[in-house]
Image (cartoon, rainbow over all chains, first blue to last red):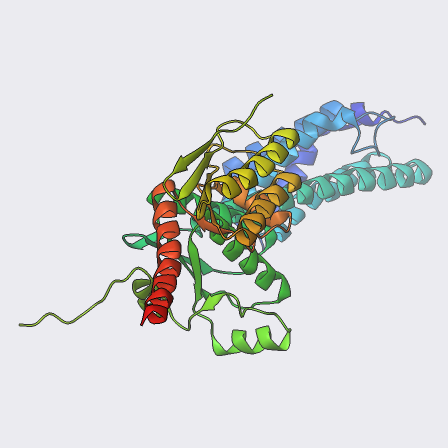
Length: 283
Length: 133
């Protein structure tokens, strides 16, 4: 007996959907607080329609081929919208794999007289739905990664504010780890601000840098040298005891850079450099 | 042949680089400047590179060379107005221009030169005074 899977599925479409919906509604992990039953049904129906329309005997186990582009698109949409609604990856996984149970159940009822064919189709349907599952997770992770990338960009943008603390003195508090890419941004911002404000002293405050290794120190030295080339002085402040320890243990030479323990002492030093004095007023 | 003008201002020589430097031009500038220092007995050299947007390692070395050469001829060199991008490039190339003083703009550069030369002249005058006494 030759079984046309596409015809069979089209004929049993309603039944599959019912099975699938019942499976989902019976499941403990159903999140009807996040997605109403009607919406769930509409979502499921759309996906099932696309699958039934695409599937035929030849392409059944090639779930990642171009013929399934429509299905993949719908899957991606479902995955992203579910991730936004707050479904866990597990919920989405159960949802997709519920389709497999429904399909297999219908197949079992339909071709129970021919174990060989049934076995064959069971395997192929399994493969197909597995590939759907993979697509779902891929999209899910891709969505998450986009969020992470965007946040990284935002952090690097907002994390380098150059503050004008006095006429001719700018300060740049660095918070977080310094890597090559960030140093580049920090350096460019600082140098540009020096040009814009005509400041002759820059204070680089590293009290927010969790750890200094030889690479970070290298970047700091580069920044200081670049400021010097521009014709401004650069003071590094906020060196914590632990950082002083690691720097010396690593054998990094910071002796030709002016370093101060706190921003306050750096500012005091800067005042002295431009011949300013801060005094209590006589009242 | 193109040459970069070297202006004399009192005790100082003023060089403003307004065009992109190519190797030949830079070499000419180097020799012209040393000649001028010796001819005029200038005490300070101010090089304004605010219009310079591209440097390579050769140009960095020439600037460093001019600094060292003037130094042995007893003239201070101040490089002023370096663009941020230029500064970053030079640092990435490993050229820190150790022997050259720098300033943000011509005004500050002049003040720096005057300060440097003033202090050394004071010293000489003091010495002269003491020898007279």
